[in-house]
Image (cartoon, rainbow, N blue to C red; front, side, top):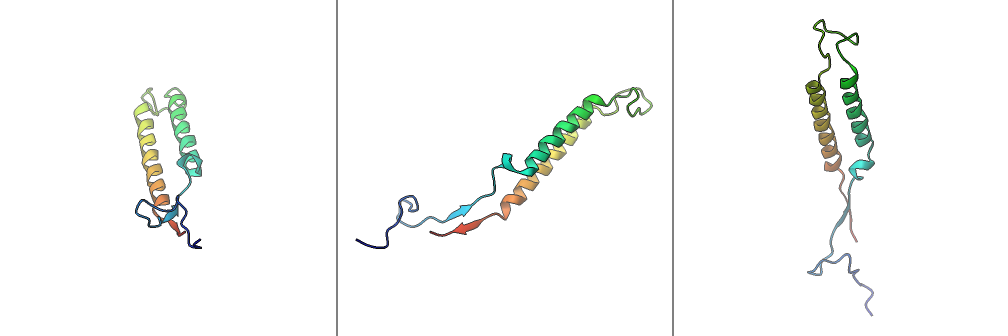
Length: 98
């Protein structure tokens, strides 16, 4: 028997060894995802709670924190979250040779 055997899970169809690499954690397990969800919910709740009747009235008597502004902030938060995940994944490769 030969002492240099190749594990089948490590070999590709051509017989060469694959290079394994570690990845970042799943997105839902990260603190940035938890912060994103909490802040998004807080922005949407604030847009419902804050109105023009004593809670920061801007003089017009209308809605002070309108839904379109709240959704704009949610879009900005989403863009920031996507950029942070991209940066986290861009430098996360550590190669583990067999």
